[in-house]
Length: 336
Image (cartoon, rainbow, N blue to C red):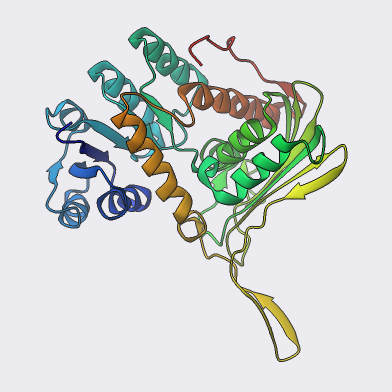
Protein backbone atom coordinates (compact mmCIF):
# COMPACT_ATOMS: atom_id res chain seq x y z
CA UNK A 1 0.00 0.00 0.00
CA UNK A 2 1.19 3.51 -0.85
CA UNK A 3 0.69 6.32 1.68
CA UNK A 4 -2.29 4.70 3.32
CA UNK A 5 -4.11 4.04 0.06
CA UNK A 6 -5.48 0.55 -0.69
CA UNK A 7 -5.30 -0.21 -4.41
CA UNK A 8 -8.25 -2.47 -5.23
CA UNK A 9 -8.86 -4.76 -8.15
CA UNK A 10 -12.50 -5.58 -8.94
CA UNK A 11 -13.33 -8.87 -10.66
CA UNK A 12 -16.75 -8.75 -12.31
CA UNK A 13 -18.38 -5.52 -13.47
CA UNK A 14 -22.03 -6.54 -13.59
CA UNK A 15 -24.68 -4.91 -11.42
CA UNK A 16 -23.05 -5.67 -8.05
CA UNK A 17 -19.47 -5.28 -9.26
CA UNK A 18 -20.14 -1.87 -10.79
CA UNK A 19 -21.95 -0.81 -7.61
CA UNK A 20 -18.95 -1.81 -5.49
CA UNK A 21 -16.50 -0.12 -7.84
CA UNK A 22 -18.50 3.10 -7.78
CA UNK A 23 -18.71 3.16 -3.99
CA UNK A 24 -15.01 2.41 -3.57
CA UNK A 25 -14.09 5.20 -6.00
CA UNK A 26 -16.44 7.87 -4.68
CA UNK A 27 -17.37 7.09 -1.07
CA UNK A 28 -14.52 5.24 0.68
CA UNK A 29 -11.57 7.17 2.04
CA UNK A 30 -8.29 5.35 1.47
CA UNK A 31 -9.53 3.20 -1.42
CA UNK A 32 -8.60 3.45 -5.09
CA UNK A 33 -9.82 1.14 -7.84
CA UNK A 34 -6.79 0.53 -10.06
CA UNK A 35 -7.95 -2.52 -12.02
CA UNK A 36 -11.18 -4.12 -13.19
CA UNK A 37 -11.78 -7.44 -14.94
CA UNK A 38 -14.71 -8.81 -16.90
CA UNK A 39 -15.15 -11.07 -19.91
CA UNK A 40 -17.32 -8.28 -21.29
CA UNK A 41 -14.50 -5.88 -22.10
CA UNK A 42 -16.80 -3.02 -23.12
CA UNK A 43 -18.62 -3.17 -19.79
CA UNK A 44 -15.30 -3.38 -17.92
CA UNK A 45 -13.98 -0.37 -19.84
CA UNK A 46 -17.08 1.66 -18.95
CA UNK A 47 -16.63 0.90 -15.24
CA UNK A 48 -12.89 1.61 -15.46
CA UNK A 49 -13.60 5.02 -17.01
CA UNK A 50 -15.74 5.88 -13.99
CA UNK A 51 -12.86 4.87 -11.69
CA UNK A 52 -10.35 7.43 -12.93
CA UNK A 53 -9.09 5.21 -15.71
CA UNK A 54 -8.43 1.91 -13.94
CA UNK A 55 -6.71 -0.73 -16.08
CA UNK A 56 -8.93 -3.30 -17.77
CA UNK A 57 -8.12 -7.00 -17.54
CA UNK A 58 -9.62 -9.98 -19.34
CA UNK A 59 -8.01 -12.53 -16.98
CA UNK A 60 -8.82 -12.68 -13.26
CA UNK A 61 -5.56 -14.35 -12.22
CA UNK A 62 -3.50 -11.65 -13.95
CA UNK A 63 -5.40 -8.97 -12.01
CA UNK A 64 -4.88 -10.80 -8.72
CA UNK A 65 -1.14 -11.15 -9.34
CA UNK A 66 -0.66 -7.51 -10.44
CA UNK A 67 2.02 -5.92 -8.27
CA UNK A 68 0.07 -2.73 -7.62
CA UNK A 69 -3.17 -4.49 -6.59
CA UNK A 70 -3.25 -4.64 -2.78
CA UNK A 71 -6.66 -6.21 -2.32
CA UNK A 72 -9.32 -7.82 -4.51
CA UNK A 73 -13.09 -7.62 -4.63
CA UNK A 74 -14.75 -10.62 -6.29
CA UNK A 75 -18.14 -9.92 -7.88
CA UNK A 76 -17.98 -12.41 -10.73
CA UNK A 77 -20.71 -15.02 -11.31
CA UNK A 78 -21.13 -17.40 -8.36
CA UNK A 79 -19.42 -20.34 -10.05
CA UNK A 80 -16.11 -18.43 -10.14
CA UNK A 81 -16.06 -17.21 -6.52
CA UNK A 82 -14.17 -20.15 -5.02
CA UNK A 83 -11.49 -20.15 -7.71
CA UNK A 84 -10.90 -16.42 -7.25
CA UNK A 85 -10.82 -16.59 -3.45
CA UNK A 86 -8.27 -19.42 -3.53
CA UNK A 87 -6.08 -17.44 -5.95
CA UNK A 88 -6.19 -14.42 -3.63
CA UNK A 89 -5.18 -16.53 -0.63
CA UNK A 90 -2.33 -18.05 -2.64
CA UNK A 91 -1.18 -14.52 -3.54
CA UNK A 92 -1.47 -13.39 0.09
CA UNK A 93 -3.96 -10.66 -0.81
CA UNK A 94 -7.07 -9.72 1.22
CA UNK A 95 -10.29 -10.42 -0.63
CA UNK A 96 -13.90 -9.36 -0.25
CA UNK A 97 -15.78 -12.17 -1.95
CA UNK A 98 -19.42 -11.62 -2.78
CA UNK A 99 -21.85 -14.22 -1.50
CA UNK A 100 -21.97 -17.14 -1.86
CA UNK A 101 -18.29 -17.79 -1.13
CA UNK A 102 -18.63 -20.93 -3.28
CA UNK A 103 -21.49 -22.91 -4.76
CA UNK A 104 -20.77 -26.12 -2.81
CA UNK A 105 -19.71 -26.89 0.75
CA UNK A 106 -16.70 -28.90 -0.42
CA UNK A 107 -15.30 -25.91 -2.32
CA UNK A 108 -15.95 -23.66 0.68
CA UNK A 109 -13.99 -26.10 2.84
CA UNK A 110 -11.04 -25.79 0.43
CA UNK A 111 -11.09 -22.02 0.96
CA UNK A 112 -11.33 -22.46 4.72
CA UNK A 113 -8.36 -24.83 4.81
CA UNK A 114 -6.31 -22.65 2.47
CA UNK A 115 -6.85 -19.64 4.72
CA UNK A 116 -5.93 -21.65 7.80
CA UNK A 117 -2.79 -22.74 5.98
CA UNK A 118 -1.97 -19.09 5.32
CA UNK A 119 -2.13 -18.52 9.08
CA UNK A 120 -4.24 -15.37 8.99
CA UNK A 121 -7.63 -14.14 7.87
CA UNK A 122 -7.67 -12.86 4.32
CA UNK A 123 -11.30 -13.51 3.32
CA UNK A 124 -14.34 -11.37 4.05
CA UNK A 125 -17.65 -12.61 2.62
CA UNK A 126 -20.21 -10.14 1.26
CA UNK A 127 -22.99 -10.68 3.77
CA UNK A 128 -23.68 -6.95 3.89
CA UNK A 129 -26.74 -7.21 6.14
CA UNK A 130 -24.33 -7.28 9.08
CA UNK A 131 -23.69 -3.63 8.22
CA UNK A 132 -27.34 -2.62 7.81
CA UNK A 133 -28.36 -0.23 10.59
CA UNK A 134 -31.74 -1.90 11.14
CA UNK A 135 -30.16 -5.33 11.50
CA UNK A 136 -27.41 -4.01 13.79
CA UNK A 137 -29.94 -2.24 16.00
CA UNK A 138 -31.88 -5.47 16.43
CA UNK A 139 -28.71 -7.38 17.31
CA UNK A 140 -27.86 -4.69 19.88
CA UNK A 141 -31.36 -4.92 21.36
CA UNK A 142 -31.03 -8.69 21.70
CA UNK A 143 -27.64 -8.25 23.31
CA UNK A 144 -29.12 -5.89 25.89
CA UNK A 145 -31.34 -8.69 27.20
CA UNK A 146 -34.46 -6.56 26.87
CA UNK A 147 -36.60 -9.36 25.39
CA UNK A 148 -34.75 -12.19 27.10
CA UNK A 149 -33.50 -15.33 25.41
CA UNK A 150 -34.39 -15.54 21.73
CA UNK A 151 -36.90 -18.30 21.02
CA UNK A 152 -37.92 -17.78 17.40
CA UNK A 153 -36.41 -16.17 14.27
CA UNK A 154 -38.46 -15.13 11.25
CA UNK A 155 -36.80 -13.81 8.11
CA UNK A 156 -38.80 -12.41 5.20
CA UNK A 157 -37.11 -11.84 1.82
CA UNK A 158 -39.32 -10.60 -1.02
CA UNK A 159 -37.72 -10.08 -4.43
CA UNK A 160 -39.45 -8.01 -7.16
CA UNK A 161 -40.89 -9.35 -10.39
CA UNK A 162 -38.55 -11.55 -12.40
CA UNK A 163 -38.99 -12.63 -16.00
CA UNK A 164 -36.95 -15.79 -15.38
CA UNK A 165 -37.60 -17.99 -12.37
CA UNK A 166 -34.87 -19.59 -10.30
CA UNK A 167 -34.66 -23.26 -9.46
CA UNK A 168 -35.06 -24.04 -5.78
CA UNK A 169 -31.34 -24.89 -5.70
CA UNK A 170 -30.39 -21.47 -7.09
CA UNK A 171 -32.87 -19.69 -4.83
CA UNK A 172 -31.22 -21.30 -1.80
CA UNK A 173 -27.55 -20.85 -2.76
CA UNK A 174 -27.78 -17.42 -4.39
CA UNK A 175 -30.59 -15.62 -2.55
CA UNK A 176 -31.67 -17.39 0.65
CA UNK A 177 -27.98 -17.66 1.58
CA UNK A 178 -28.33 -14.08 2.90
CA UNK A 179 -31.17 -15.11 5.19
CA UNK A 180 -29.29 -18.20 6.34
CA UNK A 181 -26.39 -16.02 7.43
CA UNK A 182 -28.67 -13.43 9.02
CA UNK A 183 -30.27 -16.13 11.13
CA UNK A 184 -26.86 -17.40 12.27
CA UNK A 185 -25.30 -14.06 13.15
CA UNK A 186 -28.41 -12.48 14.69
CA UNK A 187 -29.31 -15.48 16.83
CA UNK A 188 -25.68 -16.16 17.74
CA UNK A 189 -26.15 -19.89 17.12
CA UNK A 190 -25.60 -22.39 14.35
CA UNK A 191 -28.52 -23.87 12.42
CA UNK A 192 -28.79 -27.58 13.22
CA UNK A 193 -31.71 -28.79 11.10
CA UNK A 194 -33.75 -27.56 8.13
CA UNK A 195 -36.94 -28.47 6.29
CA UNK A 196 -37.55 -26.91 2.87
CA UNK A 197 -40.91 -26.45 1.15
CA UNK A 198 -41.64 -24.37 -1.94
CA UNK A 199 -44.16 -23.47 -4.64
CA UNK A 200 -42.94 -24.08 -8.22
CA UNK A 201 -42.96 -21.10 -10.57
CA UNK A 202 -43.77 -23.39 -13.47
CA UNK A 203 -46.15 -26.31 -12.81
CA UNK A 204 -44.30 -28.29 -15.49
CA UNK A 205 -40.95 -27.82 -13.73
CA UNK A 206 -41.17 -29.18 -10.20
CA UNK A 207 -37.83 -27.66 -9.13
CA UNK A 208 -38.57 -24.15 -10.36
CA UNK A 209 -39.27 -21.84 -7.44
CA UNK A 210 -41.55 -18.86 -6.94
CA UNK A 211 -42.07 -19.03 -3.17
CA UNK A 212 -40.24 -20.97 -0.49
CA UNK A 213 -40.29 -21.45 3.26
CA UNK A 214 -37.38 -23.03 5.14
CA UNK A 215 -38.12 -24.23 8.67
CA UNK A 216 -34.99 -24.12 10.81
CA UNK A 217 -33.88 -25.36 14.24
CA UNK A 218 -30.89 -23.88 16.05
CA UNK A 219 -28.33 -25.38 18.38
CA UNK A 220 -29.67 -24.48 21.81
CA UNK A 221 -33.33 -25.11 20.97
CA UNK A 222 -34.63 -21.98 19.20
CA UNK A 223 -36.67 -22.38 16.01
CA UNK A 224 -37.44 -20.23 12.99
CA UNK A 225 -38.52 -19.76 9.39
CA UNK A 226 -36.94 -18.21 6.33
CA UNK A 227 -39.60 -16.98 3.92
CA UNK A 228 -38.57 -16.14 0.34
CA UNK A 229 -40.32 -14.90 -2.80
CA UNK A 230 -38.75 -14.78 -6.23
CA UNK A 231 -41.60 -12.68 -7.59
CA UNK A 232 -43.37 -10.45 -5.10
CA UNK A 233 -44.97 -8.47 -7.90
CA UNK A 234 -44.60 -5.19 -6.00
CA UNK A 235 -41.00 -4.54 -4.91
CA UNK A 236 -38.19 -5.60 -2.60
CA UNK A 237 -38.50 -6.18 1.13
CA UNK A 238 -36.30 -7.74 3.79
CA UNK A 239 -37.49 -7.98 7.37
CA UNK A 240 -36.50 -9.87 10.50
CA UNK A 241 -38.63 -10.53 13.56
CA UNK A 242 -37.31 -12.22 16.69
CA UNK A 243 -39.48 -13.44 19.54
CA UNK A 244 -37.88 -13.64 22.95
CA UNK A 245 -38.98 -14.67 26.40
CA UNK A 246 -40.25 -11.19 27.25
CA UNK A 247 -41.24 -9.66 23.94
CA UNK A 248 -40.86 -9.49 20.18
CA UNK A 249 -38.64 -7.14 18.17
CA UNK A 250 -38.18 -6.64 14.46
CA UNK A 251 -36.75 -4.54 11.66
CA UNK A 252 -38.65 -2.52 9.08
CA UNK A 253 -37.86 -2.93 5.39
CA UNK A 254 -39.21 0.50 4.41
CA UNK A 255 -37.53 3.81 5.19
CA UNK A 256 -39.76 6.02 3.06
CA UNK A 257 -42.29 8.47 4.56
CA UNK A 258 -45.84 7.35 5.27
CA UNK A 259 -48.23 9.38 3.13
CA UNK A 260 -51.83 10.03 4.12
CA UNK A 261 -53.77 11.57 1.25
CA UNK A 262 -57.07 11.14 -0.56
CA UNK A 263 -58.53 8.72 1.97
CA UNK A 264 -55.47 6.46 1.70
CA UNK A 265 -52.38 5.67 3.78
CA UNK A 266 -49.39 4.58 1.70
CA UNK A 267 -45.66 3.99 1.87
CA UNK A 268 -43.24 3.47 -1.02
CA UNK A 269 -41.40 0.15 -1.21
CA UNK A 270 -37.84 -0.19 -2.51
CA UNK A 271 -37.85 -1.37 -6.13
CA UNK A 272 -34.83 -3.64 -5.62
CA UNK A 273 -31.84 -4.42 -3.38
CA UNK A 274 -29.39 -1.67 -4.50
CA UNK A 275 -31.65 1.02 -3.08
CA UNK A 276 -32.61 -0.85 0.11
CA UNK A 277 -29.05 -1.81 1.09
CA UNK A 278 -26.94 0.94 -0.49
CA UNK A 279 -25.88 2.37 2.88
CA UNK A 280 -25.03 -1.13 4.11
CA UNK A 281 -22.74 -1.62 1.10
CA UNK A 282 -20.98 1.65 1.92
CA UNK A 283 -20.49 0.56 5.54
CA UNK A 284 -19.32 -2.89 4.44
CA UNK A 285 -16.70 -1.51 2.05
CA UNK A 286 -15.48 1.07 4.57
CA UNK A 287 -15.03 -1.69 7.16
CA UNK A 288 -13.22 -3.89 4.64
CA UNK A 289 -10.78 -1.19 3.55
CA UNK A 290 -10.13 -0.35 7.21
CA UNK A 291 -9.32 -3.98 7.98
CA UNK A 292 -7.00 -4.21 4.96
CA UNK A 293 -5.14 -1.15 6.22
CA UNK A 294 -4.73 -2.92 9.55
CA UNK A 295 -3.27 -5.93 7.79
CA UNK A 296 -6.08 -8.45 8.02
CA UNK A 297 -9.74 -9.18 7.45
CA UNK A 298 -12.81 -8.57 9.58
CA UNK A 299 -16.55 -8.96 9.18
CA UNK A 300 -18.22 -12.13 7.90
CA UNK A 301 -15.47 -14.74 7.65
CA UNK A 302 -14.62 -17.77 5.56
CA UNK A 303 -16.19 -19.78 8.39
CA UNK A 304 -19.45 -17.89 7.87
CA UNK A 305 -19.19 -18.57 4.15
CA UNK A 306 -18.58 -22.26 4.83
CA UNK A 307 -21.37 -22.74 7.36
CA UNK A 308 -23.92 -20.86 5.25
CA UNK A 309 -23.18 -23.32 2.45
CA UNK A 310 -23.42 -26.28 4.85
CA UNK A 311 -26.92 -25.07 5.73
CA UNK A 312 -27.74 -24.47 2.06
CA UNK A 313 -26.61 -27.99 1.22
CA UNK A 314 -28.94 -29.39 3.89
CA UNK A 315 -31.79 -27.26 2.49
CA UNK A 316 -31.23 -28.66 -1.00
CA UNK A 317 -31.10 -32.18 0.40
CA UNK A 318 -34.40 -31.52 2.21
CA UNK A 319 -35.93 -30.24 -1.03
CA UNK A 320 -35.03 -33.58 -2.61
CA UNK A 321 -36.06 -35.84 0.27
CA UNK A 322 -39.15 -33.89 1.43
CA UNK A 323 -37.89 -34.53 4.96
CA UNK A 324 -36.10 -32.49 7.63
CA UNK A 325 -32.33 -32.77 7.22
CA UNK A 326 -29.48 -32.25 9.67
CA UNK A 327 -26.78 -29.70 8.84
CA UNK A 328 -23.43 -31.41 8.39
CA UNK A 329 -20.27 -29.37 8.86
CA UNK A 330 -16.76 -29.60 10.21
CA UNK A 331 -15.90 -28.54 13.75
CA UNK A 332 -15.30 -24.82 14.01
CA UNK A 333 -11.53 -24.16 13.80
CA UNK A 334 -9.91 -22.17 16.61
CA UNK A 335 -8.85 -19.51 14.06
CA UNK A 336 -12.51 -18.45 13.78
